[in-house]
Image (cartoon, rainbow, N blue to C red; front, side, top):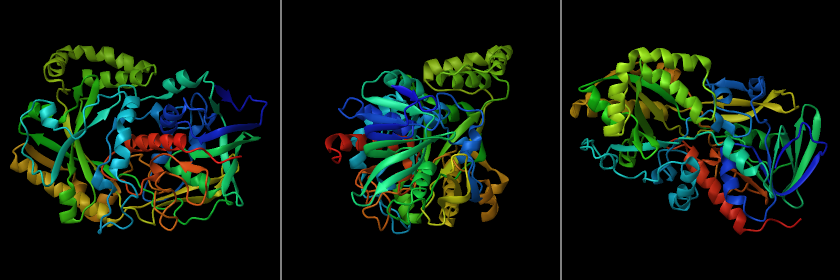
Length: 520
Protein backbone atom coordinates (compact mmCIF):
# COMPACT_ATOMS: atom_id res chain seq x y z
CA UNK A 1 0.00 0.00 0.00
CA UNK A 2 1.22 3.52 -0.75
CA UNK A 3 0.81 5.91 2.19
CA UNK A 4 1.53 9.63 2.35
CA UNK A 5 3.18 10.74 5.58
CA UNK A 6 2.16 14.34 4.92
CA UNK A 7 -1.52 13.39 5.34
CA UNK A 8 -1.22 10.47 7.78
CA UNK A 9 -2.44 10.85 11.35
CA UNK A 10 -0.23 7.93 12.38
CA UNK A 11 3.26 9.03 13.41
CA UNK A 12 4.80 5.69 14.40
CA UNK A 13 5.12 2.63 12.17
CA UNK A 14 6.42 -0.92 12.57
CA UNK A 15 7.71 -3.53 10.13
CA UNK A 16 9.95 -6.56 9.91
CA UNK A 17 12.13 -4.80 7.37
CA UNK A 18 12.45 -1.07 6.67
CA UNK A 19 14.05 0.09 3.40
CA UNK A 20 15.11 3.74 3.18
CA UNK A 21 14.86 5.02 -0.38
CA UNK A 22 12.34 4.38 -3.15
CA UNK A 23 14.58 4.08 -6.20
CA UNK A 24 16.17 1.39 -8.36
CA UNK A 25 17.88 -0.55 -5.54
CA UNK A 26 14.62 -0.71 -3.59
CA UNK A 27 12.62 -1.75 -6.66
CA UNK A 28 15.11 -4.59 -7.08
CA UNK A 29 15.00 -5.61 -3.41
CA UNK A 30 11.20 -5.71 -3.40
CA UNK A 31 11.18 -8.06 -6.39
CA UNK A 32 13.15 -10.47 -4.21
CA UNK A 33 11.33 -9.90 -0.89
CA UNK A 34 7.71 -9.07 -1.72
CA UNK A 35 6.55 -12.70 -1.70
CA UNK A 36 8.18 -13.61 1.61
CA UNK A 37 6.41 -13.52 4.96
CA UNK A 38 8.18 -10.30 5.94
CA UNK A 39 6.27 -7.08 6.47
CA UNK A 40 8.25 -4.51 4.51
CA UNK A 41 8.02 -0.74 4.80
CA UNK A 42 9.71 1.53 2.25
CA UNK A 43 10.48 5.12 3.31
CA UNK A 44 10.77 7.57 0.41
CA UNK A 45 11.58 11.21 1.08
CA UNK A 46 9.93 12.40 -2.14
CA UNK A 47 6.39 12.08 -3.39
CA UNK A 48 4.65 10.63 -6.39
CA UNK A 49 5.81 13.59 -8.48
CA UNK A 50 8.86 15.83 -8.23
CA UNK A 51 8.50 18.98 -6.14
CA UNK A 52 9.10 22.21 -8.01
CA UNK A 53 11.73 23.20 -5.42
CA UNK A 54 13.43 19.79 -5.35
CA UNK A 55 16.85 21.27 -6.16
CA UNK A 56 16.73 23.04 -2.78
CA UNK A 57 16.42 19.66 -1.03
CA UNK A 58 19.26 18.20 -3.14
CA UNK A 59 21.60 21.13 -2.57
CA UNK A 60 25.07 20.20 -1.30
CA UNK A 61 28.25 22.06 -0.47
CA UNK A 62 30.67 21.19 -3.29
CA UNK A 63 34.44 21.57 -3.01
CA UNK A 64 37.31 20.00 -4.90
CA UNK A 65 36.71 19.14 -8.56
CA UNK A 66 33.61 20.53 -10.28
CA UNK A 67 30.66 18.22 -9.61
CA UNK A 68 27.06 18.38 -10.89
CA UNK A 69 25.68 14.94 -10.05
CA UNK A 70 24.14 15.94 -6.73
CA UNK A 71 21.57 17.97 -8.69
CA UNK A 72 21.27 16.47 -12.19
CA UNK A 73 22.19 12.93 -11.18
CA UNK A 74 19.69 12.45 -8.35
CA UNK A 75 15.91 12.49 -8.04
CA UNK A 76 13.81 12.49 -4.87
CA UNK A 77 10.55 10.68 -5.48
CA UNK A 78 9.13 7.22 -6.02
CA UNK A 79 11.16 5.49 -8.74
CA UNK A 80 14.29 7.49 -7.95
CA UNK A 81 16.63 8.32 -10.81
CA UNK A 82 14.91 5.77 -13.06
CA UNK A 83 12.47 8.60 -13.86
CA UNK A 84 15.19 10.33 -15.87
CA UNK A 85 18.15 8.03 -16.54
CA UNK A 86 18.93 6.32 -19.83
CA UNK A 87 18.63 2.75 -18.56
CA UNK A 88 22.03 1.38 -19.61
CA UNK A 89 23.06 -2.08 -18.38
CA UNK A 90 26.61 -3.46 -18.36
CA UNK A 91 28.07 -5.65 -15.60
CA UNK A 92 31.45 -5.23 -14.03
CA UNK A 93 34.04 -7.85 -14.94
CA UNK A 94 36.17 -10.19 -12.82
CA UNK A 95 39.21 -7.96 -13.14
CA UNK A 96 37.27 -4.92 -11.91
CA UNK A 97 36.83 -6.68 -8.55
CA UNK A 98 40.39 -7.94 -8.25
CA UNK A 99 43.19 -6.62 -6.06
CA UNK A 100 45.80 -4.71 -8.10
CA UNK A 101 49.24 -3.95 -6.69
CA UNK A 102 49.33 -0.57 -8.47
CA UNK A 103 45.88 0.56 -7.20
CA UNK A 104 45.64 1.29 -3.47
CA UNK A 105 42.46 0.07 -1.72
CA UNK A 106 41.55 -2.16 -4.69
CA UNK A 107 40.00 -5.61 -4.34
CA UNK A 108 36.53 -6.70 -3.29
CA UNK A 109 35.88 -9.32 -0.57
CA UNK A 110 33.72 -11.19 -3.10
CA UNK A 111 34.24 -12.31 -6.70
CA UNK A 112 32.05 -12.12 -9.79
CA UNK A 113 31.10 -15.75 -9.13
CA UNK A 114 29.18 -14.46 -6.11
CA UNK A 115 27.27 -11.92 -8.20
CA UNK A 116 26.85 -13.56 -11.62
CA UNK A 117 23.92 -15.86 -10.63
CA UNK A 118 21.78 -12.75 -10.05
CA UNK A 119 22.38 -10.96 -13.35
CA UNK A 120 19.64 -12.86 -15.21
CA UNK A 121 16.93 -11.69 -12.80
CA UNK A 122 18.36 -8.16 -12.84
CA UNK A 123 18.10 -8.17 -16.63
CA UNK A 124 14.47 -9.23 -16.40
CA UNK A 125 13.81 -6.10 -14.38
CA UNK A 126 15.60 -4.12 -17.10
CA UNK A 127 13.44 -5.92 -19.70
CA UNK A 128 16.46 -6.46 -21.97
CA UNK A 129 17.33 -9.34 -24.29
CA UNK A 130 19.25 -12.08 -22.43
CA UNK A 131 22.12 -12.36 -24.95
CA UNK A 132 25.30 -12.78 -22.91
CA UNK A 133 27.56 -9.75 -22.48
CA UNK A 134 30.63 -11.87 -23.19
CA UNK A 135 29.21 -12.89 -26.59
CA UNK A 136 31.39 -11.98 -29.56
CA UNK A 137 29.94 -8.61 -30.62
CA UNK A 138 30.79 -9.31 -34.28
CA UNK A 139 29.36 -12.82 -34.32
CA UNK A 140 26.16 -11.64 -32.63
CA UNK A 141 25.68 -9.20 -35.50
CA UNK A 142 27.01 -11.38 -38.36
CA UNK A 143 29.70 -8.79 -39.11
CA UNK A 144 33.23 -9.35 -40.34
CA UNK A 145 35.39 -8.95 -37.23
CA UNK A 146 37.59 -5.90 -36.84
CA UNK A 147 41.05 -7.31 -35.98
CA UNK A 148 41.70 -5.19 -32.91
CA UNK A 149 44.76 -5.88 -30.82
CA UNK A 150 42.89 -8.26 -28.52
CA UNK A 151 45.60 -8.02 -25.87
CA UNK A 152 44.69 -4.35 -25.46
CA UNK A 153 41.10 -3.77 -26.62
CA UNK A 154 37.95 -5.62 -25.63
CA UNK A 155 35.13 -5.03 -28.14
CA UNK A 156 31.78 -5.58 -26.44
CA UNK A 157 28.43 -3.86 -25.86
CA UNK A 158 25.99 -2.53 -23.29
CA UNK A 159 22.20 -2.86 -23.34
CA UNK A 160 19.53 -0.19 -22.87
CA UNK A 161 16.18 -0.80 -21.23
CA UNK A 162 13.18 -0.05 -23.46
CA UNK A 163 11.32 0.99 -20.28
CA UNK A 164 13.89 2.63 -17.98
CA UNK A 165 11.32 4.29 -15.69
CA UNK A 166 10.59 1.76 -12.92
CA UNK A 167 8.04 3.90 -11.09
CA UNK A 168 4.96 2.58 -12.97
CA UNK A 169 5.99 -0.98 -12.06
CA UNK A 170 6.47 0.01 -8.41
CA UNK A 171 3.05 1.64 -8.27
CA UNK A 172 1.33 -1.25 -10.05
CA UNK A 173 2.92 -3.96 -7.90
CA UNK A 174 2.70 -2.36 -4.47
CA UNK A 175 -0.25 0.04 -4.43
CA UNK A 176 -2.37 -2.65 -2.75
CA UNK A 177 0.21 -5.18 -1.62
CA UNK A 178 -0.63 -7.07 1.59
CA UNK A 179 2.93 -7.17 2.94
CA UNK A 180 4.56 -4.06 1.48
CA UNK A 181 3.83 -0.47 2.49
CA UNK A 182 5.48 2.51 0.80
CA UNK A 183 5.51 5.71 2.85
CA UNK A 184 6.14 8.77 0.66
CA UNK A 185 6.96 12.32 1.73
CA UNK A 186 8.89 10.97 4.71
CA UNK A 187 12.44 12.26 5.08
CA UNK A 188 14.68 9.99 7.14
CA UNK A 189 16.73 12.29 9.37
CA UNK A 190 18.68 9.84 11.55
CA UNK A 191 19.03 6.26 12.75
CA UNK A 192 18.71 5.32 16.43
CA UNK A 193 21.29 2.74 17.52
CA UNK A 194 21.18 0.62 20.70
CA UNK A 195 24.72 -0.08 21.84
CA UNK A 196 23.62 -2.92 24.13
CA UNK A 197 21.91 -4.93 21.40
CA UNK A 198 24.21 -3.65 18.60
CA UNK A 199 21.11 -2.97 16.52
CA UNK A 200 19.33 -0.02 14.99
CA UNK A 201 16.05 0.20 16.87
CA UNK A 202 14.29 2.85 14.77
CA UNK A 203 14.64 5.69 12.31
CA UNK A 204 13.33 9.22 12.67
CA UNK A 205 11.25 10.70 9.85
CA UNK A 206 10.16 14.29 9.15
CA UNK A 207 7.87 16.17 6.83
CA UNK A 208 7.82 19.97 7.11
CA UNK A 209 7.86 20.00 10.89
CA UNK A 210 5.89 16.78 11.31
CA UNK A 211 7.93 14.17 13.20
CA UNK A 212 7.54 10.40 13.32
CA UNK A 213 9.50 7.17 13.55
CA UNK A 214 9.68 3.65 12.13
CA UNK A 215 10.65 0.62 14.21
CA UNK A 216 11.80 -2.58 12.49
CA UNK A 217 13.80 -5.74 13.00
CA UNK A 218 16.12 -4.93 10.12
CA UNK A 219 16.94 -1.83 8.08
CA UNK A 220 18.40 -1.27 4.62
CA UNK A 221 19.82 2.03 3.42
CA UNK A 222 19.09 2.29 -0.30
CA UNK A 223 19.12 6.05 -0.77
CA UNK A 224 22.12 6.49 -3.10
CA UNK A 225 25.85 7.02 -2.77
CA UNK A 226 25.57 10.50 -1.28
CA UNK A 227 22.56 10.03 0.97
CA UNK A 228 23.61 6.61 2.35
CA UNK A 229 26.82 8.12 3.71
CA UNK A 230 25.05 11.24 4.94
CA UNK A 231 22.52 9.22 6.95
CA UNK A 232 25.29 7.25 8.65
CA UNK A 233 27.21 10.43 9.41
CA UNK A 234 24.21 12.23 10.96
CA UNK A 235 23.55 9.29 13.30
CA UNK A 236 26.21 9.82 15.99
CA UNK A 237 25.26 6.82 18.12
CA UNK A 238 26.31 4.38 15.38
CA UNK A 239 29.75 2.77 15.76
CA UNK A 240 32.46 5.09 14.46
CA UNK A 241 34.07 4.12 11.15
CA UNK A 242 36.62 6.29 9.37
CA UNK A 243 35.56 4.97 5.95
CA UNK A 244 31.99 6.27 6.06
CA UNK A 245 31.86 8.78 3.20
CA UNK A 246 35.46 8.14 2.18
CA UNK A 247 36.66 6.85 -1.23
CA UNK A 248 33.86 8.68 -3.03
CA UNK A 249 34.08 7.72 -6.71
CA UNK A 250 32.48 8.50 -10.03
CA UNK A 251 33.58 7.93 -13.62
CA UNK A 252 35.45 10.96 -15.02
CA UNK A 253 33.89 11.35 -18.45
CA UNK A 254 34.14 13.54 -21.55
CA UNK A 255 33.58 13.73 -25.27
CA UNK A 256 37.16 13.82 -26.52
CA UNK A 257 37.32 13.73 -30.31
CA UNK A 258 35.64 13.82 -33.69
CA UNK A 259 36.25 10.81 -35.91
CA UNK A 260 36.76 11.27 -39.65
CA UNK A 261 35.84 7.81 -40.93
CA UNK A 262 37.25 6.09 -43.97
CA UNK A 263 33.64 5.12 -44.68
CA UNK A 264 30.78 6.64 -42.69
CA UNK A 265 28.31 3.83 -43.39
CA UNK A 266 30.81 1.21 -42.21
CA UNK A 267 31.62 3.15 -39.06
CA UNK A 268 27.92 3.46 -38.20
CA UNK A 269 27.25 -0.20 -38.94
CA UNK A 270 29.94 -1.20 -36.44
CA UNK A 271 29.61 1.50 -33.77
CA UNK A 272 26.10 2.99 -33.84
CA UNK A 273 23.33 1.46 -31.74
CA UNK A 274 22.16 -1.99 -32.84
CA UNK A 275 19.17 -4.07 -31.82
CA UNK A 276 18.74 -7.57 -30.39
CA UNK A 277 15.03 -8.27 -30.26
CA UNK A 278 13.56 -5.09 -28.75
CA UNK A 279 16.78 -4.27 -26.93
CA UNK A 280 18.96 -1.37 -28.05
CA UNK A 281 22.67 -2.09 -27.63
CA UNK A 282 25.72 0.16 -27.77
CA UNK A 283 29.14 -1.10 -28.98
CA UNK A 284 32.01 -0.29 -26.63
CA UNK A 285 35.78 -0.51 -26.67
CA UNK A 286 37.39 -1.14 -23.27
CA UNK A 287 40.92 -1.70 -22.01
CA UNK A 288 41.67 -5.37 -21.39
CA UNK A 289 42.96 -6.66 -18.07
CA UNK A 290 46.23 -7.57 -19.83
CA UNK A 291 46.73 -3.96 -20.93
CA UNK A 292 45.94 -2.66 -17.46
CA UNK A 293 48.42 -5.05 -15.87
CA UNK A 294 51.17 -4.35 -18.40
CA UNK A 295 50.85 -0.55 -18.31
CA UNK A 296 49.66 -0.23 -14.69
CA UNK A 297 46.53 1.69 -15.68
CA UNK A 298 42.97 1.85 -14.45
CA UNK A 299 40.01 0.63 -16.47
CA UNK A 300 38.59 2.70 -19.31
CA UNK A 301 35.83 2.39 -21.88
CA UNK A 302 34.91 4.32 -25.03
CA UNK A 303 31.96 4.57 -27.39
CA UNK A 304 30.99 6.62 -30.41
CA UNK A 305 27.93 8.83 -30.47
CA UNK A 306 26.69 9.93 -33.89
CA UNK A 307 25.33 13.39 -33.15
CA UNK A 308 22.34 14.12 -35.42
CA UNK A 309 22.02 17.43 -37.20
CA UNK A 310 19.84 19.83 -35.24
CA UNK A 311 16.30 19.74 -36.58
CA UNK A 312 16.79 16.44 -38.41
CA UNK A 313 14.20 13.65 -38.39
CA UNK A 314 16.31 11.60 -35.98
CA UNK A 315 17.01 14.52 -33.65
CA UNK A 316 13.32 15.29 -33.19
CA UNK A 317 12.36 11.61 -33.00
CA UNK A 318 14.82 11.03 -30.13
CA UNK A 319 13.19 13.77 -28.06
CA UNK A 320 9.77 12.17 -28.46
CA UNK A 321 11.08 8.62 -27.93
CA UNK A 322 12.86 9.53 -24.67
CA UNK A 323 9.66 10.93 -23.22
CA UNK A 324 7.44 8.02 -24.27
CA UNK A 325 9.90 5.38 -23.03
CA UNK A 326 9.73 7.03 -19.59
CA UNK A 327 5.91 7.08 -19.63
CA UNK A 328 5.92 10.87 -19.96
CA UNK A 329 4.09 13.17 -22.36
CA UNK A 330 6.47 14.69 -24.94
CA UNK A 331 6.73 18.45 -24.72
CA UNK A 332 4.79 20.57 -27.17
CA UNK A 333 8.07 21.74 -28.67
CA UNK A 334 9.24 18.15 -29.21
CA UNK A 335 6.02 17.27 -31.01
CA UNK A 336 6.18 20.42 -33.10
CA UNK A 337 9.82 19.72 -33.98
CA UNK A 338 8.84 16.20 -35.07
CA UNK A 339 6.33 17.60 -37.57
CA UNK A 340 8.80 20.23 -38.80
CA UNK A 341 11.41 17.55 -39.40
CA UNK A 342 9.11 15.84 -41.88
CA UNK A 343 10.40 18.37 -44.41
CA UNK A 344 13.44 16.09 -44.49
CA UNK A 345 11.38 12.96 -45.16
CA UNK A 346 14.09 11.68 -47.50
CA UNK A 347 16.22 10.97 -44.41
CA UNK A 348 13.74 8.32 -43.31
CA UNK A 349 14.66 5.92 -46.12
CA UNK A 350 18.31 5.23 -45.11
CA UNK A 351 17.27 5.12 -41.44
CA UNK A 352 14.57 2.54 -42.20
CA UNK A 353 16.91 0.53 -44.44
CA UNK A 354 19.58 0.33 -41.74
CA UNK A 355 17.05 -0.78 -39.12
CA UNK A 356 15.16 -3.31 -41.27
CA UNK A 357 18.15 -4.93 -42.99
CA UNK A 358 21.03 -4.30 -40.62
CA UNK A 359 19.21 -3.99 -37.29
CA UNK A 360 21.25 -0.92 -36.43
CA UNK A 361 20.64 2.80 -36.13
CA UNK A 362 21.78 5.08 -38.94
CA UNK A 363 22.18 8.80 -38.36
CA UNK A 364 22.17 10.77 -41.65
CA UNK A 365 24.91 13.40 -41.56
CA UNK A 366 25.68 12.35 -37.98
CA UNK A 367 28.93 13.66 -36.52
CA UNK A 368 30.91 10.78 -34.93
CA UNK A 369 32.00 11.93 -31.49
CA UNK A 370 34.18 9.74 -29.28
CA UNK A 371 33.39 9.59 -25.55
CA UNK A 372 35.70 8.27 -22.80
CA UNK A 373 34.67 7.01 -19.37
CA UNK A 374 37.64 6.38 -17.06
CA UNK A 375 37.87 4.51 -13.77
CA UNK A 376 38.65 6.56 -10.70
CA UNK A 377 41.03 4.99 -8.20
CA UNK A 378 39.69 5.06 -4.61
CA UNK A 379 41.44 7.82 -2.67
CA UNK A 380 40.78 9.10 0.85
CA UNK A 381 40.79 12.72 -0.34
CA UNK A 382 37.57 12.15 -2.29
CA UNK A 383 34.72 12.06 0.19
CA UNK A 384 31.23 12.88 1.44
CA UNK A 385 31.15 14.74 4.76
CA UNK A 386 28.75 16.99 6.66
CA UNK A 387 28.77 20.75 6.18
CA UNK A 388 28.07 23.33 8.86
CA UNK A 389 24.79 24.29 7.18
CA UNK A 390 21.48 22.61 8.00
CA UNK A 391 18.67 21.91 5.53
CA UNK A 392 14.95 22.51 6.12
CA UNK A 393 14.74 19.27 8.15
CA UNK A 394 17.53 20.25 10.52
CA UNK A 395 20.02 17.84 8.92
CA UNK A 396 23.54 19.00 8.04
CA UNK A 397 23.82 19.40 4.27
CA UNK A 398 26.16 16.93 2.57
CA UNK A 399 29.59 18.25 1.66
CA UNK A 400 30.93 16.70 -1.54
CA UNK A 401 34.67 16.81 -2.11
CA UNK A 402 35.30 14.99 -5.40
CA UNK A 403 38.87 14.36 -6.47
CA UNK A 404 40.61 11.90 -8.74
CA UNK A 405 44.29 11.04 -8.85
CA UNK A 406 46.84 11.32 -11.65
CA UNK A 407 46.26 7.61 -12.31
CA UNK A 408 43.02 8.61 -14.05
CA UNK A 409 44.89 11.13 -16.24
CA UNK A 410 47.62 8.59 -17.04
CA UNK A 411 44.97 6.08 -18.07
CA UNK A 412 43.24 8.72 -20.18
CA UNK A 413 46.46 9.44 -22.10
CA UNK A 414 47.29 5.76 -22.58
CA UNK A 415 43.80 5.14 -23.97
CA UNK A 416 44.17 8.05 -26.41
CA UNK A 417 47.48 6.68 -27.71
CA UNK A 418 46.10 3.16 -28.08
CA UNK A 419 42.93 4.11 -29.94
CA UNK A 420 44.69 6.52 -32.28
CA UNK A 421 47.18 3.80 -33.17
CA UNK A 422 44.50 1.16 -33.71
CA UNK A 423 42.21 3.38 -35.82
CA UNK A 424 45.19 4.21 -38.02
CA UNK A 425 46.46 0.63 -38.28
CA UNK A 426 43.01 -0.72 -39.16
CA UNK A 427 42.30 2.18 -41.57
CA UNK A 428 39.01 2.97 -39.85
CA UNK A 429 39.63 6.69 -40.14
CA UNK A 430 41.46 9.44 -38.33
CA UNK A 431 40.79 10.77 -34.84
CA UNK A 432 40.75 14.54 -34.46
CA UNK A 433 41.27 15.12 -30.76
CA UNK A 434 39.69 18.14 -29.13
CA UNK A 435 42.38 20.74 -28.44
CA UNK A 436 42.37 20.24 -24.68
CA UNK A 437 43.17 16.52 -24.97
CA UNK A 438 46.73 17.26 -26.08
CA UNK A 439 47.31 19.90 -23.42
CA UNK A 440 48.64 19.65 -19.86
CA UNK A 441 47.20 17.68 -16.96
CA UNK A 442 45.31 20.68 -15.56
CA UNK A 443 43.48 21.17 -18.87
CA UNK A 444 42.51 17.50 -19.09
CA UNK A 445 41.27 17.57 -15.49
CA UNK A 446 39.22 20.66 -16.20
CA UNK A 447 37.34 18.99 -19.06
CA UNK A 448 36.48 15.74 -17.26
CA UNK A 449 33.07 15.72 -15.58
CA UNK A 450 31.15 13.28 -13.39
CA UNK A 451 28.88 10.64 -14.94
CA UNK A 452 26.32 10.61 -12.06
CA UNK A 453 27.74 7.28 -10.83
CA UNK A 454 27.98 7.77 -7.05
CA UNK A 455 30.11 4.96 -5.63
CA UNK A 456 32.38 3.94 -2.78
CA UNK A 457 31.10 5.91 0.21
CA UNK A 458 30.13 2.80 2.22
CA UNK A 459 32.69 0.43 0.73
CA UNK A 460 32.54 -3.35 1.12
CA UNK A 461 35.41 -4.93 3.05
CA UNK A 462 36.37 -7.93 5.12
CA UNK A 463 36.65 -5.92 8.34
CA UNK A 464 35.74 -2.51 9.77
CA UNK A 465 39.44 -1.65 9.56
CA UNK A 466 39.16 -1.29 5.77
CA UNK A 467 35.53 -0.49 5.03
CA UNK A 468 31.92 -0.05 6.08
CA UNK A 469 29.94 -3.18 5.10
CA UNK A 470 30.80 -6.86 4.94
CA UNK A 471 30.44 -9.28 2.02
CA UNK A 472 26.67 -9.46 2.63
CA UNK A 473 26.37 -5.66 2.70
CA UNK A 474 25.78 -5.61 6.47
CA UNK A 475 27.31 -2.64 8.29
CA UNK A 476 30.28 -3.75 10.38
CA UNK A 477 29.40 -3.73 14.08
CA UNK A 478 25.63 -3.33 13.54
CA UNK A 479 23.70 -6.59 13.50
CA UNK A 480 20.59 -5.45 11.61
CA UNK A 481 21.67 -2.65 9.24
CA UNK A 482 22.43 -3.27 5.56
CA UNK A 483 23.26 -1.06 2.59
CA UNK A 484 22.16 -1.48 -1.03
CA UNK A 485 23.41 0.38 -4.08
CA UNK A 486 26.72 1.34 -5.64
CA UNK A 487 27.91 3.07 -2.46
CA UNK A 488 29.19 -0.38 -1.39
CA UNK A 489 31.55 -0.66 -4.40
CA UNK A 490 35.20 -0.68 -3.25
CA UNK A 491 36.29 0.24 -6.80
CA UNK A 492 34.39 1.70 -9.73
CA UNK A 493 35.59 -0.51 -12.60
CA UNK A 494 34.96 0.10 -16.28
CA UNK A 495 31.17 0.18 -16.54
CA UNK A 496 27.95 1.83 -15.44
CA UNK A 497 27.21 0.53 -11.92
CA UNK A 498 23.45 -0.08 -12.09
CA UNK A 499 23.22 -3.69 -13.29
CA UNK A 500 25.91 -4.77 -10.82
CA UNK A 501 24.29 -3.08 -7.83
CA UNK A 502 20.92 -4.55 -8.84
CA UNK A 503 22.50 -8.02 -8.84
CA UNK A 504 23.99 -7.25 -5.41
CA UNK A 505 20.54 -6.14 -4.20
CA UNK A 506 19.03 -9.43 -5.37
CA UNK A 507 21.85 -11.26 -3.58
CA UNK A 508 21.10 -9.27 -0.43
CA UNK A 509 17.39 -10.08 -0.76
CA UNK A 510 18.21 -13.78 -0.96
CA UNK A 511 20.48 -13.50 2.08
CA UNK A 512 17.80 -11.77 4.15
CA UNK A 513 15.15 -14.30 3.09
CA UNK A 514 17.31 -17.24 4.09
CA UNK A 515 18.57 -15.77 7.38
CA UNK A 516 15.88 -14.95 9.95
CA UNK A 517 16.14 -11.50 11.43
CA UNK A 518 17.01 -10.74 15.04
CA UNK A 519 14.38 -11.40 17.67
CA UNK A 520 12.52 -8.40 19.03
